[in-house]
Length: 255
View 1 (cartoon, rainbow, N blue to C red):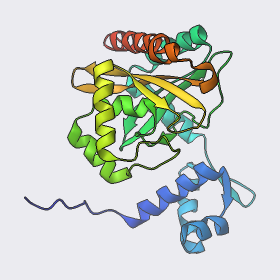
View 2 (view 1 turned 45 degrees about the horizontal axis):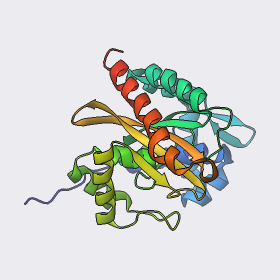
View 3 (view 1 turned 90 degrees about the vertical axis):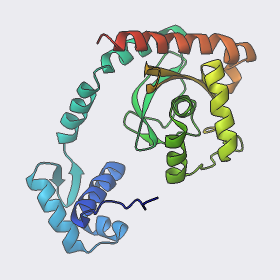
């Protein structure tokens, strides 16, 4: 078997993206701070920021740099490209109102879950998730619902790339245990997160399929453990979530 080699990358582009990621995480920063955190020379960081400023990708307030509103434009363009975004938001708004809880939609990109929409009803819990945020797949009901309908070879690649990080004592960190869990999800049609990412929080998620072989993403509903009784966790909530997933599947085909 021929050895797979990675394509050659351009260091300068990598540095620019490191700066963009840093500004995204820290809101604003000075050249010295960015250089120290990224381990780069101040002159290098200054040149990259000057280019980003000229191209209107950052703004400068005093001695600090911030990402510009250009990324709002780019983000909206990405959402429009999806084609089914409005279908997701309409259905999740209804589910949130009906359940009163936190509901979310995510898809997979580069081996991680990316949140596309988040909304909540009157009793919704507050979590650190946000639109655009990336999370590991194995510890989320959303992520496991996606993995369950992803070819095993691809799942193996994702595990090799990102590992199986432990967040709580309930997080699945064994490869074969995860594959057993994914098989169980396919059998029952929905995924469960029993305090695997956040202690005290239970989630139920159902996949949204483009067709039999392609998963678009997943819908989830989260509720504190104190409000998630046995019957609700195994019957009532799964029925609500899978129904919403099915509505999105049907409407997405004609959107």
